[in-house]
Length: 69
Image (cartoon, rainbow, N blue to C red; front, top):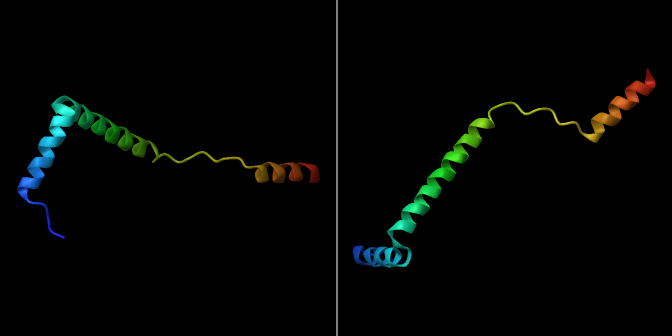
């Protein structure tokens, strides 16, 4: 396989611009940027330690301890 030439890349770029228009492309890039920012914010929030989740096994163990005492 060979790499696409500069002419092939230009033709594809022109077709994309004709189909979507400059406004839609810049709008999509803005949405992508806001999605990346939201993802980064979510990753920063995950640094906090998670609260312990109570499982049914924990509840059963506590009830057994209470009955034994």
